[in-house]
Amino acid sequence: MRGVLGDTPARDYSQKLKQFNAFARPELCRAMDDLGLQAGMRVLDAGCGTGDALAWLGARIQPGGVAMGVDLSLAHVEAARETVGDPTSVIQADLLSMPFRRESFDLIWSVNVVHHLSNAVDAMQVFKDLLRPGGRMAMGQSSFLADMYFAWDARLERATNEAVRQYYRDRYEVSERELTSVRAIVGLMRQTGWRNVRAHSYLIERVSPLHRDDEVYLAETIFRQSWGERLKPYLSPEDYEALSQLSDPAHPKFALRRPDFHFLQTLSFVTGER
Ligand SMILES: C[S@@+](CC[C@H](N)C(=O)[O-])C[C@H]1O[C@@H](n2cnc3c(N)ncnc32)[C@H](O)[C@@H]1O
Image (cartoon, rainbow, N blue to C red):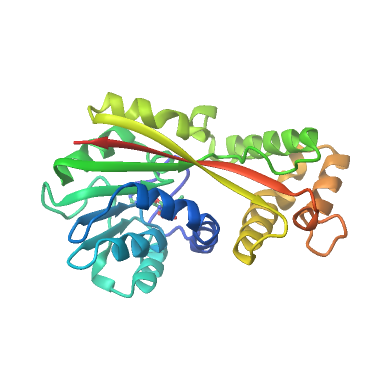
């Protein structure tokens, strides 16, 4: 039941998911719009987390559409039920044993999930069985590390990214490949026999002054939780001090208020047909 990044039914990182979805909402919604969703479709969000995308998908298939979410974590399921306002449309289950009949869906959407699964190949087969013939799978993955955090200091950015990688390797004992799962999705879909496999990446690009949702995600989820104290063992004292100043909203050097702040991260979608 435990995935490579330690997910369990009891694990709860719902605040982080809410913050990411508020941040990446424009790009996630663009990806949904590009899928050509239509009224009446049946859509599954596999690994729906806090249900933000599930709500946006549901709104795009009315009237008559059905949007179901499945997630392993009880806390995420409860958050998703609240987000969509319909407890029956979110189910707590492992993606490998979902309680749906074969060929129940027109589309399966799954974002930032594949790298959490210990057996992604089996999951792809399950997804295929749940789609009607000609139904589509949309696998989304944001890059593990952004392409640019500190436009003005590529060296510190590189040191920080390497520190994050080291932390994940030590904490979860995951390999470089598992940390860069965006690279695996095309191969995984081809290996598991999907037709018309296509990839398209959206760029999450932000400059200062930032929208509040952007500032909350970057300052809270990235600077405070992903970086913060836990990177201390992996950085020189000088770099740790510089990073702490850039990450601190109360410090005059706070990165997000710099006029040259420019952030770049990819959000890739790979689609395939059953
Ligand atoms: C990084 S989160 C992404 C959530 C959501 N798709 C989003 O984009 O906000 C990964 C999600 O996959 C869920 N998950 C991990 N392993 C799972 C499994 N075996 N079965 C169902 N859900 C799983 C986790 O509980 C978590 O909610």
